[in-house]
Length: 151
Image 1 (cartoon, rainbow, N blue to C red):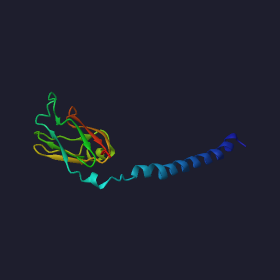
Image 2: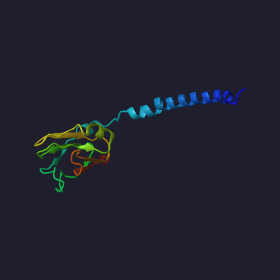
Image 3: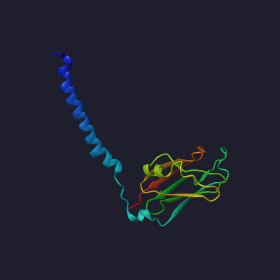
Image 4: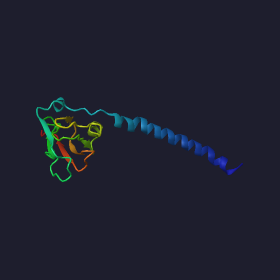
């Protein structure tokens, strides 16, 4: 009997077992973690205060130092975690997220903010540091620092 036929059977069984184990991990460990819904307190969803970040006139100019004002914003969940970007410039801008799963989903290149009064709002529901930039003007950068309320 050839040597390959003695190895083929056990190798086939090992491949089947590895496939079943991989599928099981994907189905019962990976997907539930990816699809789990974040549950947040109701008061975090309706904060009493709103923060506004202005996109200043002339932000399209690379030499202008101030583009997003304020550039770094600290917010607290349930107090002022609704942030609105207001475009005061004469050209379209974006708020393109670099981190944060939900922030990236909603703050991508598709959220073009119209010139002269256009707005984009995002409700932060997880603590962390969120960096963003304007896609057509990548020198425009900002940060939102979100913290949990003190007990």
